[in-house]
Length: 461
Image 1: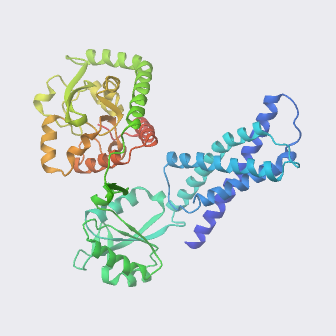
Image 2: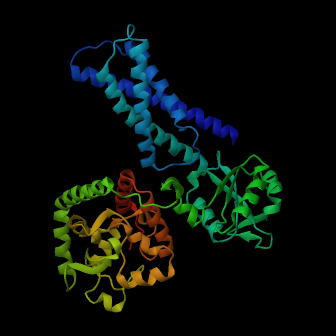
Image 3: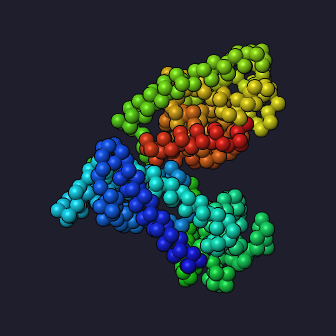
């Protein structure tokens, strides 16, 4: 495993360096083409290209781009790359300006082109390297041996996630129980011991990472488990409880000089509200204009397919738990609400065209009108009917706090697989995390991932 990590790091450095050099060569060709004249051979610019490539690798190292061992989302990778490549380019410009001004003819236009080209080439190179790395890990090369502490629902969920994504490079060896009185096997894997025997299990089974899946454990119990693991040289990760999820950011404030810790707060306030509303208006207006032919065709097909209105209008609860009329294309029979309100998989109330509309999420398009009118936002907690809100507020802690923001067409819960007939309690956790950690980039990421899911995910119903 150590050898695999070293080879992975070295190969990634080589790919980054090569892609940076390639970007500079592309910039050289573009510069020559735009000027329409000979600017000398590329060998005259090799030193400049090498400085930029070395700067890129050094900045990536300090940004910890070579420390991560598991796959990250491409959107997050690109977001970090923009900042890192920009810093590397500024370092190159500063170095040339102060140290090599006499030796090199400084080409500002070429540096700008090299910066843009490097964003593309390095992203492609890293994506290809990551794909090759995941291909090897799926075949057992360089996988990381993992022990899961906890045989309950959370432990099983962690195992299931790892089995569904073999490209992460995890190989679960087995489980450890809290007291040794549990089952001998869990989902086909052995229970290798309990908390008191963790050091022996870690040593005998060559464990490299321990994941603790005991969200209900007390702090004292967690400290005890971690101290057992720390006797061996292993990575330790803990699945958080609800409080830890919600208290992801702790800030210090004061009350007339009395210090207070703020563990929960609404991120979307002040000028951020104006910014989010401006994005909602601009994007929804542009989308309705572009999508109007599709929406018109959909309306015609709905009328031809079954009797009833084109739109399905239903009362939902939005900001501050105030009701509003949410629009959708009708995908069920006109009398569907008399037969029940909750949508399920293979719902017999769907029309023929409605099945397609739900699969492709086209039935949600009229909600952009709700966004333009100000009842909804592009991103936010999905709105529920008043009867369900009253029911959920009684049984789910902090449920009403999700109404501190406008309801959304899509949300953090939905892109993480919690849509349709899924756990409301789990959805609430994700909605509250979004409210307390809002950023414009997070909204854009959710919108992009929603678009990709609509194109490639066939789990919708």
